[in-house]
Amino acid sequence: MWAVDEAAAPRSRTHATASDAIGVAARWLFEGRRIDMQGVASELGITRMTLHRRSGGRERLIGEAMWSLAEQAWIRCVSAAEVDDDPSGHELYSVRVIRSYNAVLVSSRGVRQLFDAEPDLALRLLTDAAGPIEPRMVAVTSEVIARDEAHGCLSPIIDRMDLAYALVKLAEAFLFGDLVAGRPVDVEAANRVQTALLEAGRVASRPDASSR
Image 1 (cartoon, rainbow, N blue to C red):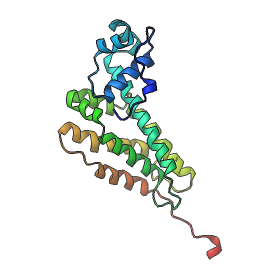
Image 2 (image 1 turned 45 degrees about the vertical axis):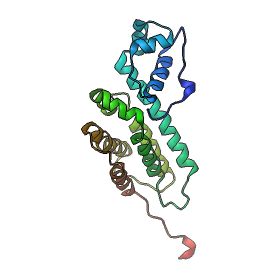
Image 3 (image 1 turned 90 degrees about the vertical axis):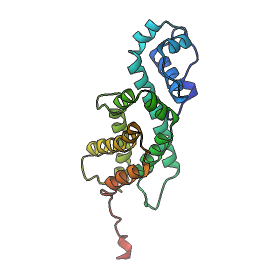
Image 4 (image 1 turned 180 degrees about the horizontal axis):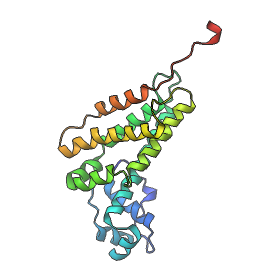
């Protein structure tokens, strides 16, 4: 969906595990294919009943596959932000990561096809506070906020986890809400609002003591 790690997507394995099933499902999602339990089971060389037992069912399998792809994309965005570090402090690290991830998300063929084919399922999996995606997204978002805090350039205006939760919910509202409604996704609006929330806690640069 967002990105796919071929090494994590085995083609066939007689004694396939839940991780193997997630790898195949993730590849199928990335390719824009509908997750068919019989098809996935056949590719893994196991029965459909075995696949259900090991994966927890179709909805859980899709949710875990979605997170696998989302996590891979997030890691790539974090790595890119590290390489493209901004020593001038003009832009917060957390802003760079989140903006990059938003761009990957809205350009994903897999996301759009899943919303087109099964919008209720896609929205439920992506936005459920107890689901496979949202709590994990809140956790990784809090980590990039913590990085800015550790570098002394950000003091969040609210509790870090509350801020991370708000940023994730804003992305859901701006990006997924438009997809469900069939409207063009306004990723720039999402970027502006998320950036404003983070920038509100930016720590002002202190004048160098030697210049006083």
